[in-house]
Image (cartoon, rainbow, N blue to C red; front, side):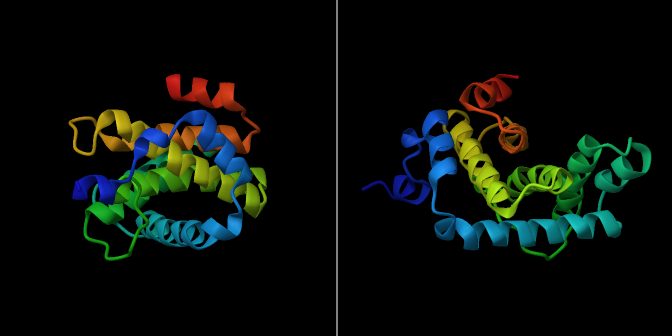
Length: 179
């Protein structure tokens, strides 16, 4: 048996329709531990990057010089986590597709939007389930190692999670990916 296939799982079962259905129907108790850990760890490293001078300080720069809108805050939260992570911060992160930066990028924009919108915890958790699975789905076509930056697919997945928070359906989520 191929060990790589066993470790990476069968991504051929993922498709947008079934991912959306799963996000809508999953028993949240089955995913609560991992999603709450994702929120806790990835938020902590993002905060670290926003409050201390790590690396290029992209997150801090966006906050300092960008507009004070939700889009800027979402980008800054993701960038700050990567600033800290890529420059030696020892805080743990929950990964996506084998990457800490992709895990942060999947988490932070969705979390920032959910807080701003006043989304309840269940909706946030479902949006993050969708986001994580959409990111994994995209990686099926990109491959595990590629010249294509996985943070782009994670950002696309986060946009799908934000669409979900706004009541986006299958058509909206599909068009979000295309855009």
